Image (cartoon, rainbow, N blue to C red; front, side, top):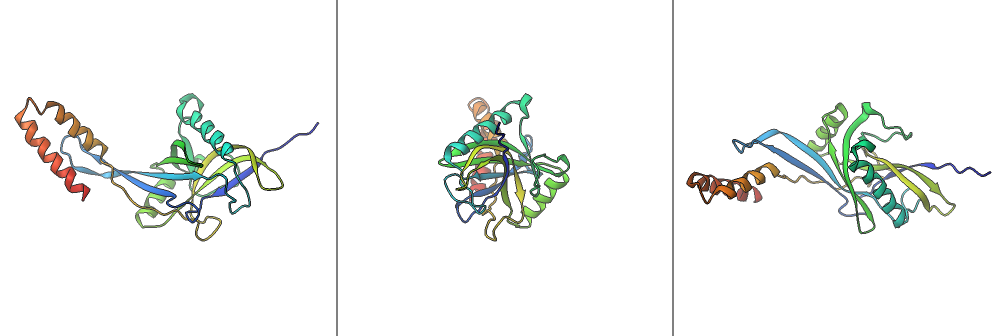
Length: 224
């Protein structure tokens, strides 16, 4: 009987091979009553989490079908609370497959395919490790991402039976240039909801008309 053992696969994402590869998004908390932006901001990472059909720095090639299957599988976990829900991401890249709760820094809330690449969205959480990530980002430090998974690799470097365990945040990718390009984008979702609510009542309330005009002017100013 032949028993095959899957290999631990650690991959670092390079912004040199995927441009743009990764964005940092900052979502403001907006007070529903005053419209003022609160100090607390939600930080998200969004962009390419894994690539296919390209020889990476570790000498491996992931067929597009393998990435698609892996993304589909991890999304089934994310969307099912009984099957794990959002997946925990760590700060730094351990060699083992076990996720260490004391090193948790983010939650992978979504993954999808875009062309041949596996895209993802990760929310940075308020843990000690997550706060380190937030501080580094605010200090303009360019961070990288790295997939952690298992699979089989043949003698030509092609990966099969690939499964994503998680995607981690890293400081030192496998080459000097493997640090994603980053920028901040303000997303005022709560302000948008407030404007929508005002718009529904504006036909019946003169005060609401004036307040809606003020909110729209503020929103326009923030676009410049």
